[in-house]
Image (cartoon, rainbow, N blue to C red; front, side, top):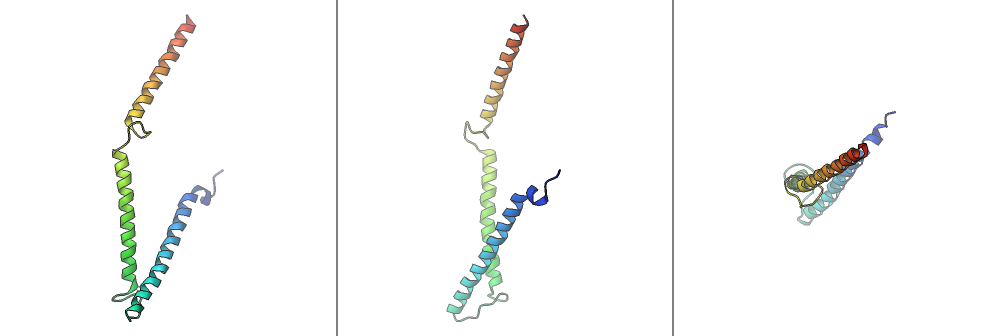
Length: 117
């Protein structure tokens, strides 16, 4: 039986909802901050147009995305190239595991040979 859609993609759904909620909160809070600043300068706050909130909002959104994607890209790229010796991601631990498996297989083979004699 196949799982329902919301069970198969629950992580994506939750992360998508969190993203939209955070973006909405950023938009609302940003608007109030922008409007207060405009009023303090004796100007009428506007959503669009010259000096409107839309440009400020787009800039803040782009700056946030740029910094987060750059951080994530750097983390993923560097962790794919660099590693700590002995960590699960390190090649040396893969080689050690393979050597241990070869020793175990050899011991099993030796036991099988000695039992058959």
